Length: 467
Image (cartoon, rainbow, N blue to C red; front, side):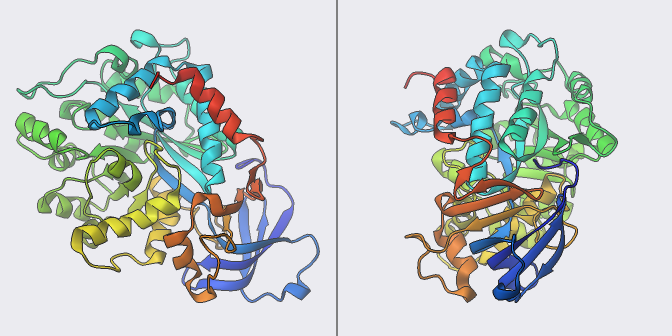
């Protein structure tokens, strides 16, 4: 399991591996002790490699980081794609699932969802968690019982997790710009005020390094400008400074959100977050779809990450965000599967480039290497794991191997193997995953959750609303 005490040394021989600064190399001997890589050697002779070294046919990458997840949204797959609707009608179905969950059912659902992520090559998840309390907003005996269920789910599925504990205080903004009270299922999200949120977040018990367990890290989130008034943002931001935690926020996902924010505060959402002190190099703005040119410059000058979730943004008809402009302005790009309309970070990566092509009618805005970096090193760094996401000595020993002999990847050439994987492979082509040096997926089979489809089916049936 990731984060467990260091064990004996082990090694892998990757047929092809994507290495920082070197691109794709052949016959790469990767060695580790415990949960860290110790040596990486290209051009190793397969005939001379010692017995017991695990051979990895295909292209091996660092573990993938899913920088934005709402685990319980997985129960909506399929039913919200039927018929027409908007983001706001989709949200009503989401609230129905939120109302049905309790700690036990959330543990079962999240374990299955995280196992699905592992099968897709994801080794670390950023869980944007706001389903805190019981029905009607009554706290559980342990006010963090739902959050602890998510941490335990990640452990059972073999993933590393950053718990992005989310402050969610209001149900939106009125036409006059006043925060609306939480109502119905939303009552489960709120802590009264931001100080109440900070007290509950403190009770999670992060240590001086921000760790909640061997493979779990504390983070924070401001849900959005419509859910957290500006005068309530400061305790959340102060908490992240005290703990060194990453800070995430939904930003400008919908035009209606922007219009309500400008009506309420005479500022765009990006400007509101900047004025509150929420933008900086430990911050990640999720979606960042409907931005002004000034917003793009503000985010870039702040050095924050921009997390794109293209399958969700397309599924909800949100729009195509200015990915290339944000990167040019100085924002590193990360990726998330968000609502889990699909769980496939390779699909998320290529949709960034394909969306940019549709918007600009130009090809080649992002290289395969840039998209792979968004899915690996930059995604991990945005979640507080800067020592993950690269196959280098000292990094966390996370590996993902993608087969190159499937109908999607057959015919791949060494020199363009990364392009073939980023632009054609899918989660179904992942064959092997290691997290912290420990096997989690082998032969395309999850080693800790033996029957992922059955686990998903049972967990979803327990909480899913009728179609």
